[in-house]
Amino acid sequence: MRVVEEIVVDCPACAEPFALEADVDAEEQSHFVSCPICGRALEIFVRCKAGEVLSSSVSVD
Image 1 (cartoon, rainbow, N blue to C red):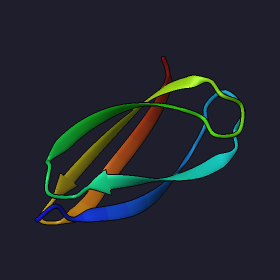
Image 2 (cartoon, rainbow, N blue to C red):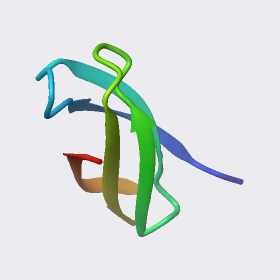
Image 3 (cartoon, one colour):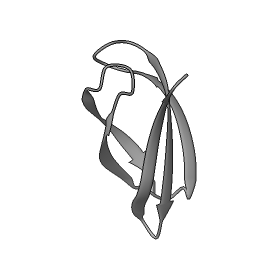
């Protein structure tokens, strides 16, 4: 069963926060998403361990 946790990140382009889901069963993951506020393409990198999010980072793609 996949376990997800909602995280909030800030868009580096418009500085607005937005929520997304992270799969806490995966140690490292990378997602490409569009900012829901400004529409810029973003890469989200999330690190997890033991079912919890350790860190996340966002960069403009």
